[in-house]
Image (cartoon, rainbow, N blue to C red):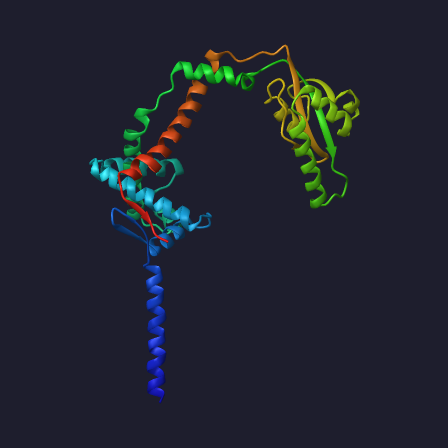
Length: 307
């Protein structure tokens, strides 16, 4: 009888182990017919440490890596051992690490020097591939820089003052989260109705809890740095006629409107041209990368995510 019971227990244990193996080895996606398993997703998650990520995000990252590896192989892109050596040397020098300290730092991340070199090689290959496919196809002409400058000129204001109106809703001392949420909702609703100077002034007179309420919420004219930091930052990013979203301070919620800019100075286009070009270039680069990764590249391969 004991022998039979032992056999049953053994069969149950084998069944549980087999079921776990089936879950671990379950295929969650394929790329050109090649499988990605749940085990790989779990391994990738372990490498992330404490960084949060969903299974979907991890799977998407694995698919991206596989696609890049396939494209690099198809184009014959490789990283030489000299390139890897130079990269590792730079990392060591930047961290002031000798070989022993470097190996110890890797060990704390669960890596051997050989595994790290493999990672570096993959990253260098990806960098070459992306540079070939993306960077050479992105440019920012002068006309685009000028259009951006004209549309965002207030960002480059360096002098002058602004005439400001304010609708202020106070947070009572000791207010709980529910009361604060109610006041915030009221501020959002008022902001949606403040569509013109007249409408703003009327709402300020009716609802603002500042002394200037009866004058349509006019606070006065301020130069940069003369208002509280959290308000100053918002006000000097607004164009004339623009109204801010509700700004919460320790005392309450402010809805701010810039009526006009007085005696303004602006940084010349020539001074900010390259700054703008770099910003637009990076944005275009990111957009081109996303288009290439999520449209062009995936269209060249058969990617199937399984439920």
